Structures are given as C-alpha cells and as structure tokens.
Length: 227
Image (tube, rainbow, N blue to C red; front, side):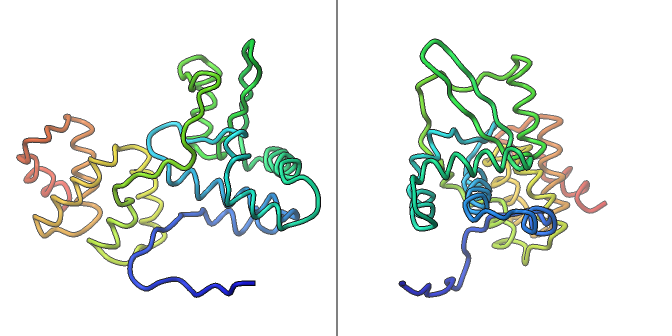
C-alpha cells in the first residue's frame, strides 16, 4: 500500500459537509460502499456549477475514482455494488432519485437530499424544469476554473467559521459565481473585508440588477454592509 504523504500546506480546495452527516448518517451507514458513494456525491456535486446539480447513474458507472474504490472493497461486480449502494442511499433518504423514460429507455438522475435537490425534483415533476435530452451525458465532475466561495473567503477575509460556511453555501446557490468573485473584489478594493459587506453587495445586485461596467453601487453597499 502506498502511504498517503499528507495534505499540502497553503490553500487547498475544500468540500463542505453538513454536521448532520456526522451526527445522523455516519453512525447509521453500515455499508462501506454506501459511505463511499455518499461522500463522492458531496464532493462531485460541490464542484458542479449552476442549477440543478446532479449525477446520473450512468455517470457514476464511469467515475474512475469511485469504481476503483468499489473494486478494492470486496469480490464481485463493482457496478452491482454501486447499484446496491445507490438503492441503500435512496432508501435512507440521503439521495433523491428520478427515473425519466422515453422510447429509447430510461435515464436515472440522482440528487442529494438538500433544499436545492428537493426543489429540482419538484420542478421536474411539475414540468417547470427539463433535464438534458435522453442520450446526452454531460462531462462528469464539471469543475469551475474560478475559485470557490470558500477559497475566496479564506484568501481575502480569514479563517472560515461554521456559521459563516452555511451562509456561504446559501450564497453560492443563490448567486452566479462571477457576481461572488466581483463582490469579493470590491470588498478588497474598498478595504472592507467582512462577509456582511459582501453579502450586501450581492443582495443589492439581486434587487436592482448588476451593471458590470458600473461600480457606483459600492457606496450603497458599503453603507448596507456597515449597519
């Protein structure tokens, strides 16, 4: 076995995992495969951009990292154990599942059971959200070249605290990544390095619209951020 050399120094990408995972799910999960799948879903969906965020079962079958973990865990077909892990996570309520059929067959979509995941499933069911056409599979693990909101916070403000992490997670779901990056940039240029100020900028843009060429909203955002 090749030993792990340790985590490097300096900024590294982080994957936020809710505390409820450790207090409720982790003690209940008995299957190593279900645990690996659950952690992989948190990791992979966090690195997606836009809305909705999901993976298909076909994508999971082609995930090299996941397949390697399953191949080492026990004897038998890794895909059969993947199917069992998905079924277990669905029955437990960790994952939400949508199976969309057409004349060519059926495509299975998997979402984390989060507010965003539940919203997406409800929208698909009521017809207000249409997922990709049957047979078109997105590239797995789409990675945004922009720094994550957590990286921006730690690079420009300081050590990330749990309460702030929840606010950042919500902001990442509510606002486009370029807005978040621009708001952090304004905060740095204005030497007002706190999240309340940045959140005020984002809220103002959400209410009034964002003009990429006009930074005149800084003063209003500064006043809002210092209340």
